[in-house]
Length: 26
Image (cartoon, rainbow, N blue to C red; front, side, top):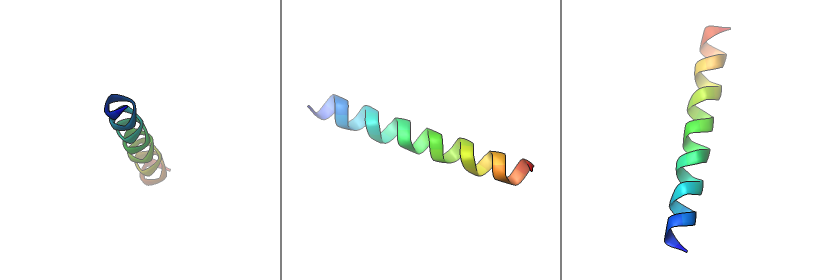
């Protein structure tokens, strides 16, 4: 249970970082 929750948090965090970097680039 904890591993799935942690992996989900990491995935969402990495996605938000990618979106922020894309916004800065454009």
